[in-house]
Length: 557
Image (cartoon, rainbow, N blue to C red; front, side):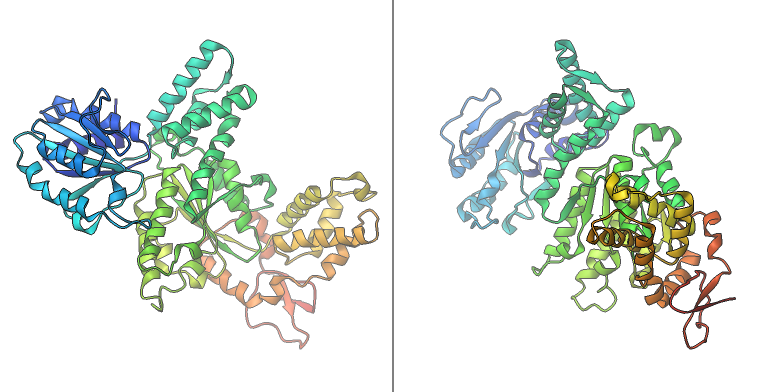
C-alpha cells in the first residue's frame, strides 16, 4: 500500500490525468519504477474513472504496447507524434528520453519536433477519448516554447517502505538458501534500510547484495557499505564533498555538554522517536575560538550517528553564469535530502554569506542566503546541518533566529581537564612504538603538569606541540622525554595571546547568545583568575576570564 509521498504522487498523477493535462514531465532515473506507477494508475478506475492503455516510445524500439509489441514504424520522433495525433482511444503515451530533442547539454533543439508538439496540442485536448503524453528523462529539459504546456510531476526516490520491502525480500531469499548469515534486529534492519534512502531501488539492491557477499553475512556493520554506495552519488554532483573519517567522538577531548546533547539525539530519525512525538533535529551552529575542535567534532558526529557526512563548499555554489549559483544551491539541497538521513556540514559559514549586506554581487549572495534560510526553516527531510563559524560578527542575524538551528554552541579555550584529555588523545594516537615511548610514562601527574603549562592553548596547538616534541626526539634518534614536551610548549605563542582581543569579542557575544560546549563545573578555572599583563606594566582594558602564564607578568583581578 502506498503511503506518504508515494500516495500523494499517485493521487496527483491521477488528478492530472483525469483533468486531461496534455503534457506531463517526470524527471527520474528509474524508468521501470515510474512505468509501474503509470500503468497502475492507468488501470485504477477508482482514481481516474476511465482506464487507459499505456504505450511507451524509445528511439531504439519505437512505440510499444503493454505486451512490448511494436506498433508501426515509429522510431523517428515525428512518426511517434503522428501516432499520438491519429490515435482515437483512451491512452497514455510515455515518451522516454525525449529531452534530447529539446536542446541543452550542447545540443540544438529540434524545432520541427517542438512545432509538432504544439500542433497536436489542440487535438489532444479536444479528443473525445482522454489522451495524455508523459515525458520521462533523467534530466529536466523543457524548451521555452513549451513552458506553458508542460506540467512537471515530482517523482521522489524510493521511500523507506519500498527499500525495506527490497531488503526483506533479499533476506528471505538468502535465508531459504542458507548461504548468507543474517544477524539483524528489527531496529538494525530499520537502520540499514534508512541508510539506503537516497538510492534508487536498483542501487539499494546492489548495495545490500554487496554487503552480503563481502563477508558472507548481513549485520549492522554493513551500514558502512551502504554509505560507500551513497558516496558515488555525492561525487557526481561536483558541489558536495563526501567526507570519510575514522574519527570517533572519543577522539575529541572535552566539550562534554555538546557531546551529551548529540548523544541524546542519536537515532532520533528512526521510527522509535515517533512514539515520543519527536521531530528529527534541524542542526547546530558551533562557534568559538579558532582551533578548538569545531571541525573535529563535526567529523566525529558522522561516526557517532552512522550517517553520511557531506561538506558544502560555498565557493563551489557561486558561479559566473547568471542563475547557476541558485541552481547549484538547489542541487546541493536536493542531493542532501535525497540521501537523508544525512549530515550537511558548512565550515566557516560566515565566509559563504559575507557579501549579503554590501550587495556587491548583484544580490546573488542574498538570494542564495534566503534560499538556504527558507530550506532550514521548512525542511522536513532528516538532514542535520552543522555550521561552524570563527568570526561570529560576520553572520547575518537572521541565521541565529529560533527555528533555523536547534542550538548554538560556543567552544572556548580548553579547560585544564580538557587539555589533559586532548594531550592524552594525541600522545596515544601518535606514539605507538615502545622504543619511541622509552622510559616516558604518561601518568596523571605528568598530564597535570603538561596541561597546566599549556594553559591558553587551543586544541590544534596542543596537537602540534605533541608533534613538535616528537620531532625533537626523532632528530636525536632517541625516545621521547618530558623535556621535549616542555620545550615545545615554551616555544609556542598561542592564539590566546596573539588574538586576545578577538577572543574577548567572541566571548562577549557568546555569553548571552550561545550554550557553552564545556560543562560549568569544568569552567570554574576560567572565573576570576589572572590575565597576562604586558611588559609595560599596564593591565589590559578588558576583563579576561582566562589565565596566561607566559610572555609577561600576571596579576590578580
